[in-house]
Image (cartoon, rainbow, N blue to C red; front, side, top):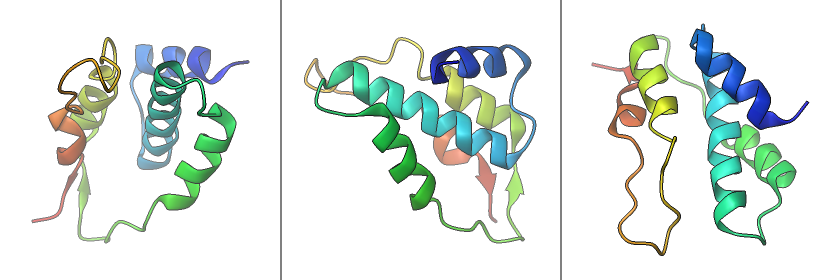
Length: 98
């Protein structure tokens, strides 16, 4: 089953926890990058993305609504080179670390 199908199914119900969010964000980001750049291998991207996650401090609170908004924001995101591309603002607000 492709990452896009899994991601679409997960987006319908919303992510449930931090680990699922990370996997979904990696899948969406790598799929977007592969669509925009034929030289990007989606599987290699997924492996690199998974390895790049750093631990989130225990004092940080996971914000499920922001996580879902972040993932939803990738829909229709233009490819780099087609103007200014800004990743969804909600992606920077998934963890509340005040």
